Length: 243
Image (tube, rainbow, N blue to C red; front, side):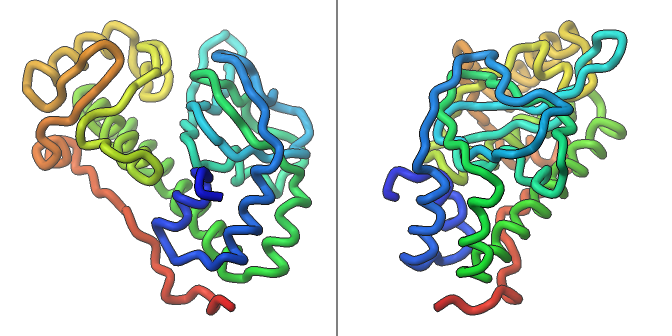
């Protein structure tokens, strides 16, 4: 349990009992390795299993009839892929590994002990799903209203915020394995715009890049540029009491 990214992530928002940790650890009993660019699940396939991300990055995406691609979400260590589709019979999106990854698949029914034995964990997972959907709506707003420069700043801040839940030392930089095409498809830009805009952000001394590693140099100024508001907490005042 000490190596569980899921427990580390959820523990940032509320204190977890030992019983809660054991319930979560069951979801990570089966580990499987996936290659970079490997498809984990196709749209239209039955949603029989969910996946805890042990390591690596994944993305969900949709393909349009003309071949264009829209990236929707990025999944990081500690995330459950795709918890928002638990109520669906068929997957709405493709899931692909951005990097090599270790995933822990578990059947949807595997959540039943958690829901029946820990109302507090149930409330936490529900809140996490709502929080992630709210973050997706914020990014949709950013895509619809912000400039390319502001969108890229927003994305880098979003990634930094998400990684901070399970990775130490984010202030010293993080690895960005997304390609220019990935970023373009995520933000509704072109590859050329991504390249030019990222260079401009670096020239403005908001970030520093070394290979695929990015360090945010001026967090406050970057937040002001794109009006980024980090919702780093969850209101747990209404949660059922633990054992």
